[in-house]
Length: 231
Image (cartoon, rainbow, N blue to C red; front, side, top):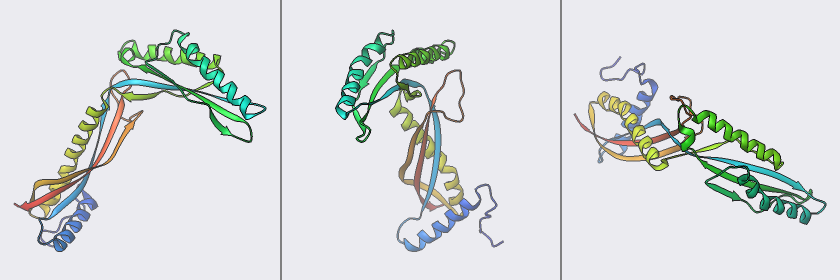
């Protein structure tokens, strides 16, 4: 092996080799500018659930489209009372206007969305069973209204703060491979030129969880450009 040639069998493997090749190319094209390294990093942070959303859906078919829309409107008018009459206290309840899903079949769709705060359900000892009881009660309401009920969709309690922390952690994780490349070419990282957020995704059921109550996962992927200088 030639002196100063990186071993692609190193822990960073082909990724390090490709980064070195890109670095050499950039140095040739941009000889007058400081050389740079571009690397990606990712991180997943767990977050407390703040709210949960359920959706009731019911379809209507009539002899005419007008009849179908009328039946849909009647359902949408009665649904809020049916939900709150079951001793449910959502923090938000929304009804959509009748949605026409088929002109030929005179079919319409009614959608009712409810949200609940998760503070009471985040308690370690009683939270899971109380949340299961909520789901059972909603399922009973759906059966009474002859509607289908969606699976719960969770929303974070502190969305902005968790997203910022996830991006920061992903940026930190991008540094070690970039530093290895810099050392391989007898240079050092002297500055961060830019950080681009490639992806920011909320995961309903993250793979790695701990604790006694469910949590959300915030996955951040970033692309970081580092400026190199002499060692």
